[in-house]
Image (cartoon, rainbow, N blue to C red; front, side, top):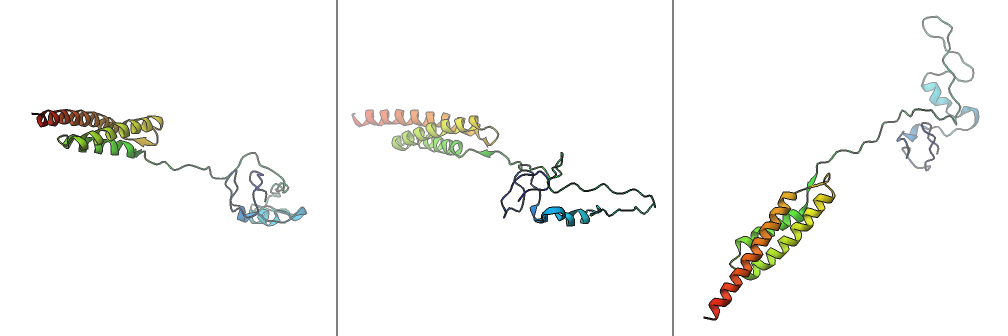
Length: 171
């Protein structure tokens, strides 16, 4: 099916033109001289040599409609806009911050502090990279930095507590 607005070729079951977005359900599937005759009559154009006399009494006629293969220079289709969406907080930044805080709070349990600290560092740094690569779509770089810092502090606190527990055990 060919769009009357832009002349683009569309599949027969398409409801809208793939190029200009015009509604294809109004396209008449006639051929020959009668192609689109109903559309032109509905728009107020005369067809088959009819003349249209305005109410003012002048003998002006409306311009003849173009042939069925005519492609206008300007398309009257609505432009396609992508709706604006708010940037979303990157989940890895949030996870890195949460794990860093958990590791920092549980620094006195060296195993948890070291594991949470490492995960906080890794997830926070990956999250920061994601936000820097797509700043229009993602936010949360501050949370990623917080995850990185608290992860480092939790890791160091876990190491210090491990050394302290090991030195107390040898006494």
